[in-house]
Image 1 (tube, one colour):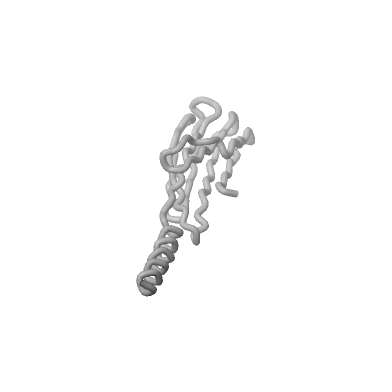
Image 2 (cartoon, helix red, strand yellow):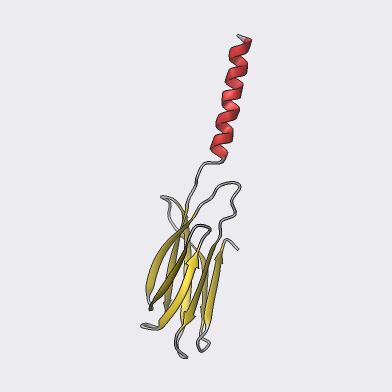
Length: 122
């Protein structure tokens, strides 16, 4: 009986340790907005990949973060206006997988050939 109790405790501890390393993704929605038709170029990345983009406002992209307890994954995006005039705005929305997203960053530039740099979490 004592052996079964000890085995049960060990299995419980093992299960708890495995669960703490479970993958919990976070989805990142990137909205590049501002002056309609404004040309831009940029990159966005996480711990696993980097994506290069070129486009015209508005554009929408999706990325993700992996959230292991021992991993500090971060989303970083840099977007550059390709013209002098107009506004380039970047909004980031974050959501746990399958949940409603929420606005976490909203920033912009009106500077000639300006840059917008975003990081989540900061």
